[in-house]
Image (tube, rainbow, N blue to C red; front, side, top):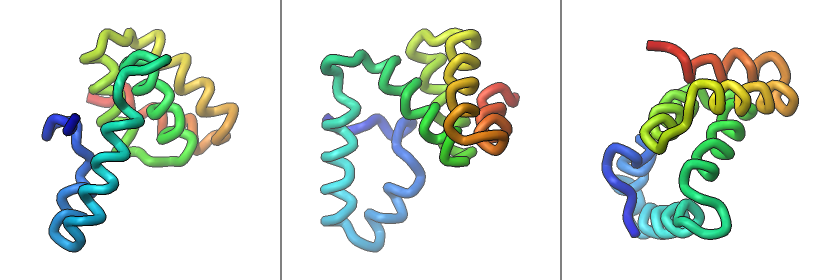
Length: 103
């Protein structure tokens, strides 16, 4: 199950140019962990959004908040996730998470 191009992180293209075999392994792993299972796709996206915010990955927050909204997440749900990121990541997690509400 390959990710749609709009859902592919930018670094996958960079990896494919430098190490296609490794990029394929990472892509397979990402498809597996993002596939529906005990958690639905929206829940997995919200968890990943929290992790990116807590890890100060602004570009990931922007991309994942768009994906979460496309999966039906409300701004209230996204805000709760950002509040959780603050508990884990402190103030930088909060300020990174606020990128979910830009533009």
